Every structure is written in C-alpha cells, then in structure tokens.
Amino acid sequence: MGTGTALAERIADRRAGVGDPRALVGELRRSLVLVPLDGGGLWTATFGGVRWIYGFTDDEALARFARARDSGDGLLTGREWEFAELRGARLLDEIVPAMGVPAGVALNVADPDGSMLFPPVMGIVPDAVAVDAGAVDTGERDAGERDGGRG
Image 1 (cartoon, helix red, strand yellow):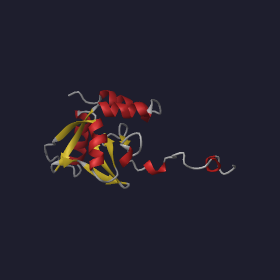
Image 2: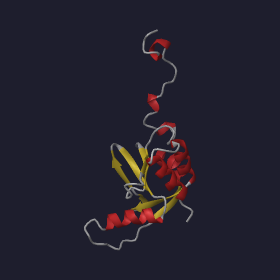
Image 3: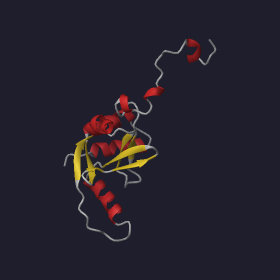
Image 4: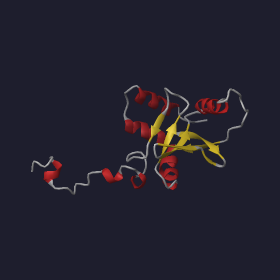
C-alpha cells in the first residue's frame, strides 16, 4: 500500500530515545497515513484541548485499532472500516489548519509501544495554527531582559 514502514521505524527510534525529531516529522510529511472515516469525516477525538486526527502507519496498525474499538464489549460487531490514505504533509499543512481549533495527529493509538503524537506546535504544523507561536522570542526585548535583567 506504500504506507509508513519507515515512519514506524522512526517512531520506534524516538520512543527508544534516539533519532532526530525533525527527521521524524519529515518522515511523517513524506508518508502515506491511513485515516479512518467516521460519519464521512476523518476520525478525531479531543483530548487536552487538542483535536487529534487519528492516523495509522499501515493496515495492521489500523486493524489493531478497529479490533480494539469493535470488541470493547467483548463482541466483534463486524463493522467495515472506511479510511482515507493521505500524505502526512496534507494532514499537517491543509487539514489541521482547516479544523479551526488546535489540532494535531495521533499515530497508531492502539499500539502502546508504537504510538506517537504530533501536537499543534511550531515545526510540526504551520506557524499560523501552532499553539506556541506567540511564545517565540522575536528578538524585540532589550538586552537586559534577554540576559535575565543583569543589564
């Protein structure tokens, strides 16, 4: 299907405390991500004030999520799962900003050892929708403020 084996490997590296976070974001941007559909829209959930788009690196990760959701009561419902296959860059650059609320991407949420969150912060989503965009040092403070007021 051409989805994220390399992305899953980069996630594993970061979870192990190695690898470059920027390379991980770059891999997400290049990768095809499977996003389940819910009522015609993308499957999302709100947690911690952020709207998370659920995405999966491959069929198996999506299937684990589907099984966990379908068997919550111990019975398999046999529901068919529809999904879209989207480039990570499209999720981050187009879909997240269009949501109108702080939004990010949650990958492989059914995999406790393989999940990864891509929050709505600078370097991941466009600066215009990053929740930390206002916290950036613009260099407009005077030197006394920059060095702790020792001026």
